[in-house]
Length: 113
Image (cartoon, rainbow, N blue to C red):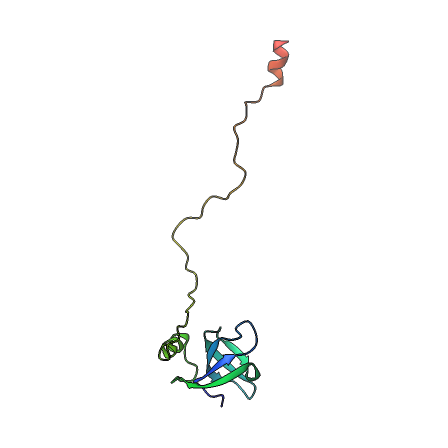
C-alpha cells in the first residue's frame, strides 16, 4: 500500500491536508514524502493513501516530483535558496545627526569678563 509513487494526504502536522507522494520507503514505520508538503521523513500513521499513483523512481528529486504532479493537474511550489544581491548594503539606520552650535571655550568667557 505504501510504495514509491503513491499519492497521499498528510493527516497530522503543519502540512496537514496537503497532498504528497511517497519518494522512498525508509522502514516499516517511516517513508520519505515530497510534493505540496515539505520534503521530509514521515510516519505512515500520519498519511492517508489515495488511489492515485505517480510514475516516479525511488529517491526522485523535487523537480521530478513537481513534473509528476503536473500530470494530475496539481501545481507544486519550488522554493529556491535566497541569492546574494550585488547591491551594497544600506547604511545602518540610527538617530540622525543634528547640527549643534559650536562650543564656546572657557578661556574666551574669561577674557570677555
